[in-house]
Each structure stands twice: as structure tokens, then as C-alpha cells.
Length: 63
Image (cartoon, rainbow, N blue to C red; front, side, top):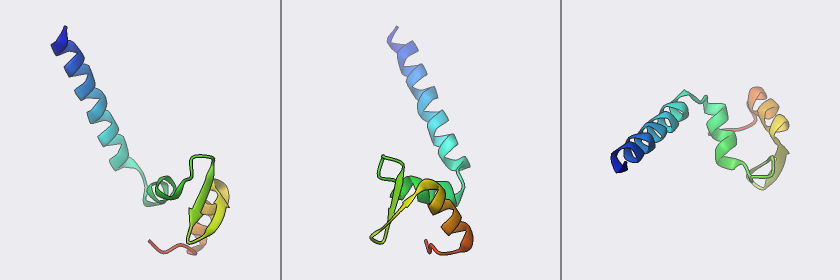
């Protein structure tokens, strides 16, 4: 039983690591500066997630 739980946990951890590698730089940036409420805080400025993606597309963020 313990080995099954350990195997399942390892598979879930592996899936999370693989999914994290698939994220784009923009998604990683949004996740890093996300406040958990759907807003992105960067250098003292607050953006909604959509505004942050649009600003990043325009090249306003340097990371």
C-alpha cells in the first residue's frame, strides 16, 4: 500500500515538473508576480492578468 502511494506521489510530482517546463516565459512571469487575486504586481504597479499580458506583448516588462 505504501509503495502505491509513493508511486502515485512521484508520478504527480513528475507531471508538475514537466508542466512547469512547458510554460512560456510570459506565463512564468505572470505566475511569479501574481498576488493570488488575479492581479499582477510588478515594480509597484498593479495590473490585471490581461493587462499584464498585453503590456508584456508590447515589451513594457523586462525580465
